[in-house]
Figure 1 (cartoon, rainbow, N blue to C red):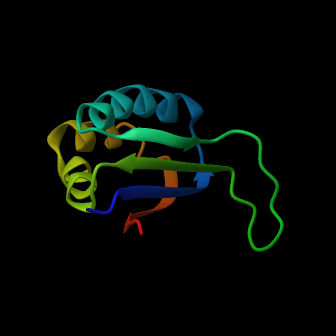
Figure 2: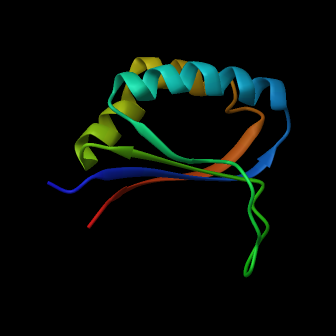
Length: 96
């Protein structure tokens, strides 16, 4: 079975404290659902397109596990801490 991935492209972060609080709680929820961090910010260069201040990629055992994690109460409680001040695109993608 193919892995599942969360790919989050953060477009605008208005409150770093909210994002930090989200990150702590979200990490616990994601890890509890089997998520493994592959990319969490870090050094980057924009070669084409829009500058993105933060990119995050999580790997899951499969696509269904990634979707279940996102829909979990634990993750949604975490996201509630930042969603009014953090603007992102988030996709769940099945790997090859």
